[in-house]
Image (tube, rainbow, N blue to C red; front, side):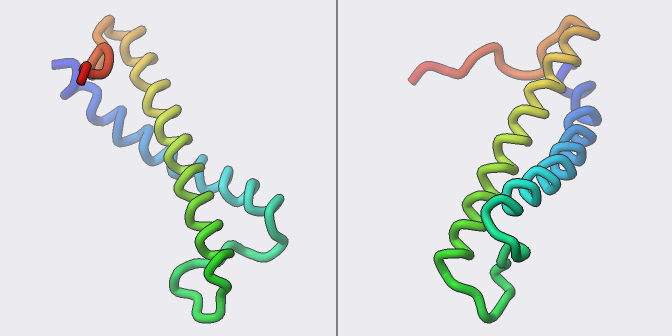
Amino acid sequence: MGKIAFLPISIGSGFIAGAVARKAFAAVWGVVDDEEPPKPEHRDVRLLKLVAAVALEGLVFSITRGLVDHGARHAFARVTGQWPGEERPEEE
């Protein structure tokens, strides 16, 4: 039941994480380079610079999304008393 009730919160926090991650990536890229980050659809772009931009963007988005999701789960658990997910990773 907790997982179903958490679904709208998860979706909302995903949108928030995306917005925060976009701003964070722009700030980090501003330290790396004065130009806008290259995108795969740009024709004249150095491959190394594209790889760096895509890797950095993925890193920032993944970290931001993970932290926001974990925080939303903690807030949900404080309010409802139920953790919406697994308590810990499964052992291999």
